[in-house]
Image (cartoon, rainbow, N blue to C red; front, side):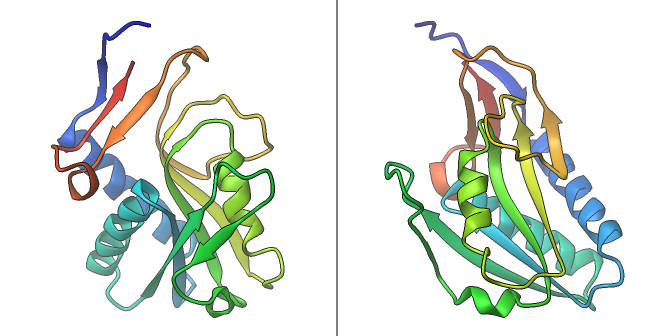
Length: 171
């Protein structure tokens, strides 16, 4: 396997893409008083925290709530936990947030957490969409769409989790 890494996004580009995604979320949900961001642990939750901070900065009148969902990816059945009850999302706009959309399995699992909660609208936001969807899941808001071969791997590095400077790499 090749050890060559290609930089997809640097720290400044990640910041710009995050800001653009936040504005798109705001524009798409302008009439809403409350927006609920659901971050998929670990990097998706960090990305959701960043989006929440930007949204609160550009729209301080909005209530931007954050839910952390932890998904057990090694199990065949959906097993997910949230840090607060999902019922707070009732009749609200929910945006599922992750760092990379690859097959769509993780986002599909996160959507399943809300299957019994009546929502106004559900959307997805990702920093990088790899376009290798196996599940019928698509990104409503994305920083970059990237066409890759299946053997390639996208790695998103976030300072809060990885203790390294923000970057997205293709290897």
